[in-house]
Each structure stands twice: as structure tokens, then as C-alpha cells.
Amino acid sequence: MDAMTRPALNRDYERRPYWHATMPPLHDRAGRQLPDSVDVAIVGGGYTGVAAARKLALQGAKAVLLEARTLGWGASTRNGGIIHPGYKWGVPALIRRYGHDLARAIFLESMEAMDLVTGLIRDNDIDAELRTNGWLELAWAPGHAAEFDMEATALESFGMTARVVPKADLHAEIGTDAYHGGLAIAPGGILHPGKWFAGLVGLAERAGADLHESTPVLSIRRQGDGRFVVETSRGAILARDVLVAMNGYTDGAAPSVRRRIVPIGSYIIATEPLPADVAHEVSPTGRAYFDTRNFLSYWHVSADRRLIFGGRVSFMPTTTDRTAKLLHGRMLDIHPQVAGHRIDYSWGGKVAMTFDRMPHIGRLG
Image (cartoon, rainbow, N blue to C red; front, side, top):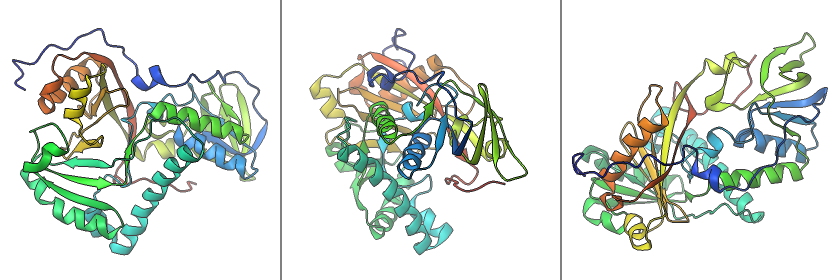
């Protein structure tokens, strides 16, 4: 849609995540007594921290989770709600970097992670609005579409289902003329990050996890006996091991982790609920979508028919209002049929990017 003919963005949207507005409330976990010593201190109360606290509790370890703000305040309840295996590097690039066998092993670890999430949701009847219809990667440039055949072959060699969708057939998958082809991939899908997180917190606490909010960690230092002193705003805790799980919000409490990552902002808008026919035109298959541009876009239609549209619109610090305007314009360029429908929510958050664009898990010091 031409910029001159786009409807203006309404400015009375809520400046908070849609997921926060529609997730179950989490009770206050601030001010509870901290333990003097633990087997493991976990710094960060997002998916990684809460999942680790649950696992350690199930194994009988004494662990404490320390969250500076409220549980799930960061990326865990600010993301786009898309769940799928894989990494920033596509499968052909993984094979070039690591060789076929190691690349396959690395990729299958991401499959196992996705299966863990979907299994916990299904086995524990968590209402996370999970839909496993796969996802569609969309070619922003003709050259990107030309690479999809090779990517599909590589994905299938790793046990995935992948199908190249020519430009002429895209309307069966998505209501747009903005792209040069697609790659439909399964498994994968969509969920409500806030509802999933609330369910995960419930699983962790039923397992006996000790979760604390409003407890910033100020420093972590190793003693002569190998144990760690974790200094918090509410006192010190002695720990045999420390798990740092702050991702894009890693601060000066863990400088050795902080210098290994670059926090990148990602931003999202959510429309009002769309009429059923418009929602179906946008997303006939109920898939998740993302494209191949450098500042990628990602989107899906939620269970209540909102278009959840996100992207990285700036590497520089920006504002919710500025990014809402940019995302709104990009959204209408892709889906002009949504023009005239209001934006109800706009928000952003930070995710950690490593220098080689791969996840890093290991021991420091």
C-alpha cells in the first residue's frame, strides 16, 4: 500500500504487550525470605530460569530463582508467539559451518526443545492456545526464493517436512502479493507466550521451585572454596553453582556473559480482532509467517483473530510509538486488507544476539 494512501495509525493503543493483558495473573512473589545457601542460584525469571528451577526441584536440588522485576517481565512474555526448531542460520548454512552430522545433531537439539514445550503443554493441559500448523518462510527477494529448493532438501534430510510454494500459489497459504515465493515447513506453530509462561510457573512451583521477584542480583563472586557469593538487593546467598539466565537483559552482575552478547530490540503491534473473513484471507492455513529480509518481519493471526505483527525495525534505541508507526506501515504493505482496523497494543523488548548468531551454553570461569 502506498504511503500516501495508508490510513493513519490510531494513537490510543495500549503501550504494553497484548500477552500481558490476556494472560492469567501471577501472584506477587516479592519480599519472601531468601535462603542463606543453596545448591544452585538462578539469575533471571524467564523461560530458561523457571524451566531450570522446575527441573532442579524435580531432581531434589535446593535452588533459588532471583528475578529483578516480575517473573516473565522480559522476552518470555514479549515475543511473537511463534515456536519452531532451528537457529538464525538456515540448515544449509549450518551444514557448511559444522558438517552434516554435527549440524544435524545441533538442529535436532532445537527439535527436542520444541517437543519439550509442546509436550509439557499437552501433558499438563496448559491453555496456551497452541496450534501446530507449521510456518511459512517468505522470500523478500527473487534470489531468496531461488534458495528454497536447497533449503527444503536440507530440512528433509534432518527429518522435517518442507515444501516450496511458488509465487503463483502463495494465495493458498497467505493473503499477500508482497513476496516472491515461500517455504512451508512443519513441525512448528503458534502459542500465547503469556499463557504458556503462567503454566510453566505453575509447573515449577508444584515441583517445589523457590521463585523470588523484586530481587536484583548486584554481583556474583567466587570464594576460595569454589562456591559463589550472590549479592542481591536483599542480602547475600551462598551457592555451589550459579545459572545466569538473563538473555537480552544481562547486566553488570554478570560481566563475563554481558560482553558476549548484543541486546537487540524487537517490536510488535496487535490489531483489534479482525472479522472472520479478513482473518481467513490473511492466514488461510493458520500458520506462523516470517520473511527473509535483514530486518525481518514475523506475524500470525491469534486465536481471537488479531494480527500479531512484529519485526526488528531499528538497531538503535527507539520508542514504542515510533516503532508502532513503522510496523503499521510495513504491515499494511504486506496485508492491505487490514487497512482501517485499529491497533490495540504496541510493545517491544530485547533479545540477546551472540557474535556468531548461535546460542551459547556452558560454564564460565
